[in-house]
Amino acid sequence: QLLRVNYRTRNDKVRHEQEKGKSSLRDQLKKILNDLLNNKGAKAIQNYESLRAENKECDLPALLGLKDYVDCMFLLAEEYERQGSYELAFTWYEHAYNKENENSGRQYLREEMKDRIIRLSCKNLLKSVQPNLAITYLKKVLTLSLNKNEEAMIYKKIADCQLTFGDWNGSMANFNKALSLCPNLKGTQKLREKLQNHFLQKNILYKFASFQ
Image (cartoon, rainbow, N blue to C red; front, side, top):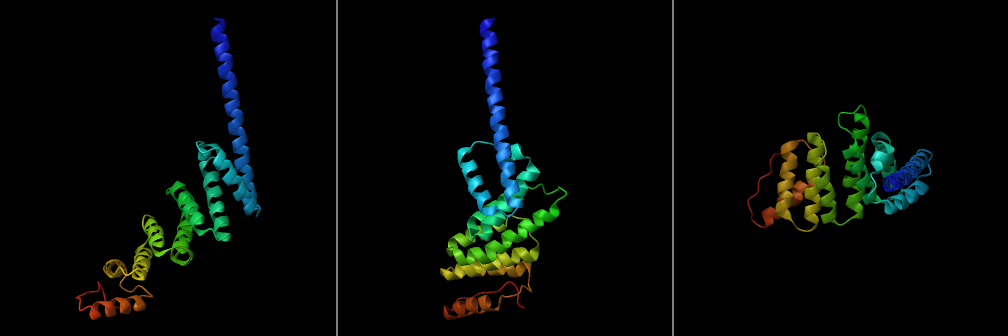
């Protein structure tokens, strides 16, 4: 009987310590979110990275609640983007986008995250990473809920990247995907001319999916 009492007491102490730890983590996460909301982004990122490194196995969304967690991820991504850490910004925008429930009352936030992911992949990352890596990010964008114009633009960007390392067939294939989705896609003239000239010089038959 005494052994059972001692065992229960030890278990109670362990549970108490675990709850104290969770409460402490929750408080730290709320402080990080509060710092982000009050324009203390650099400090928030430093604290979040330390917290995540020390608690890799912890379920942070469960501690903070999904809504606040998504808000925190969105604001962290925004701060990374502001600092020029575009790959980290992309990762956290994508993470927040996937966590946000598509059927929630915050579809506007999901659309905003999607727009930022597209902007990062089509502008910032194209200029700051190697073409093969840029294509990897662009392909991730294709997994989002895109309209036809957005999807066509991404395929066109992939085609542009492929030209930089001489993948002419791949570029033509993705350019045709873009034109099939959006025949009147803007900004295609240069790419069309490059592909056309290349295949004419090589005396290779080619066909665009659609002519403007």
